[in-house]
Length: 419
Image 1: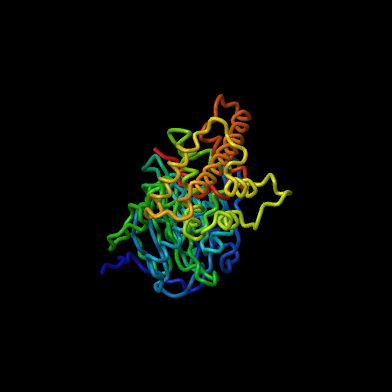
Image 2: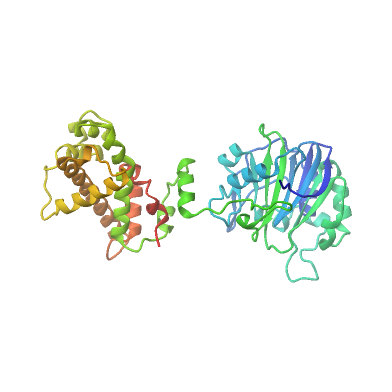
């Protein structure tokens, strides 16, 4: 069994610590000590979004341990290192990686016990106390600023700042201090921090420090062999998000998704996901098409005042497949393909939908769904001045229709596209 390799120790005896570059630490020492995790609202500052922070946090007492990775991890000595890093990365990891949680402080980060610090929240982007400490904005030996941050006991913060001020930036992390340490990220242009809090959110117990070049699916903590995050395919991430209740709602998502190669491919995938999620469970559970229709539409029978709802049409066409016939529609060919799909997904044992009339009713339902999608997508294409319907028009049409979205949102291809 392997264990994380400890890089250094320091002590927090005041119950609070300050963090950031030297002037940030000085500002933290001037501010009143914070007590637990509090809500921090993102604010717009010019062309960027920032959090205004006091640069100090309540921190669990006694020894604190430092670990080296492609960045740094600092934690109370009793913290489970890998479990804590995994929690932080799930709540708010690197914004440059997929499936990395929240980018800013919000309700989810509060519930997850994580304080988010982004590139514009500290260092030289927050210039409070910069004139007091007198830090140079750039290292004279380079053409770019050195990226680093200190963690210091609140009671010793000003003394530590004065000590580090006289130490060259590229050597600060070599100094072993009893009440603080310096974290160097000189190969990164920007730095990010994440404080992990205890269960009561009364005090921080860990701190993750990383840069834009920190790739957690390729990062191994010193002394360990496995990367901190497991790489997941698009499909694996999608399935996990569904299980975790991820909110896919929002217009930017369907606009920016990968585009399937053909429009009909997207439509087929939408219908197949509907068949697999909603129709297959009915095939073995019910012996009559009426009972199946009642279960599918969550109503004993369609009401006249519901004549324009999705449930009304699904109920009607499933139980009366020959109502409103479609001219020149090859119902037999469609029925053969739908039956083959259900047969392959059911373990080659169809029940209710082995009946020709029942499969005809199901095909009529699918035809109605396609008609609704294409009508809405056509209107959207005209509004967007498209000469023809595009995959994005299909996605936005489904997204904007609450009824269609409720039954088609489980399609992987709808969200992730396909090569």
